[in-house]
Length: 548
Image (tube, rainbow, N blue to C red):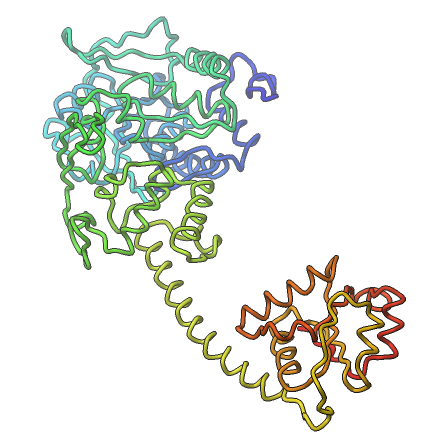
């Protein structure tokens, strides 16, 4: 049974929240800590990233503020993302407090919060920093350093330490430095107020939620609350203190839970979105109500759904092969087929929520519906519609080529086999065709023919054996005893007839000259009953041991 870190390691009451997270990283280093639509990060990898940023903060910020009595405050203005979580935890590891600033706040409110809280620095994205228009605060800002977290560049900006003391911040009975973050109210009833939140309170709330919700390392916790709300902090530490995975910015959940204005506020935080409008929509096909978001990207050249399409099919931006892939995706995810209209060549299987089980279902559908066999290992290495469509096309081309080669090789092989299996008919004495031996004992069958006319053949149920048996029967009057691994003679003759029919070789007149010998060539005496083996050993003239 899973125990939380405090119970399992006997953590003390005064232990800091980041110390608990460090212990969790050692406990479950290979478990997934952070997930997003772009990448995943294990607890071990997360700890490494935190240490890198922590080193930058301590070397660039704490040096200039060494000796100050008050706890330093670092503002963080990054959308919900892996970068936001790493930045927040690096601030805590540096024994500083953080001030979350939502991405969509007016510049005036941002300036007020920075001044009022006496923030010493701010961590933000490179793009956000390049677009900052805070004229009243710009003289006090200094770019200290840049840092890469996965594919995102963040910057650390330092402020002058000697600006006027801000307004009173409510300390909620905190000791001087017994807080880890400041959260500002909306200011709907007047001026926004900053509230210091105790570290012990955050830890206690997280453990209470972990226990109540029975969260363990196998679970995934979604983080979709705006960073301007305490709920986002609760989502983060409830996940990381339990060893679970924290998944940021899950738009499917947002669409189902937030009101339209809230969805717009979240979408606009995305660095690639310029404008957005969210409306309720009734589907003309199903009649179901849904939430639809219209977004305008900042750079249309990056929008694959608008540019660079070829071979369009009906009203879709996909060609026919890509449309087939999109249709199969909809079946795997149980979406209405109208959802295909929202997909483009760069649409990601994993971003839609696809995991290994979905990939297994897709692999089966491709084999059953399209009759194409793909390598599951190769399917695991691709992600977007274009890649799936290209793989299907390549495999289809290979199959067609193989079919042509197979037919060509098969005809050549047949000619070779027929040529090699031609018998010298002068070896056999022509005589009157014998009557049917069906139902007669083996010894009767054997002695009905004179010597040179009894042939023992193995492999008659295979490809080569079918042609060999056909040539023997067509070019001679020999009686052929066929070794077949079966339970009865009836089943054996049925297999021979079915096999020869497969190649168009069976002739009903042959039935009287074929006798099945139930056998197993891996056994002693070929697995033939002793009395039958004794008769055959004295009567067989020629043996064809035919095997693949």
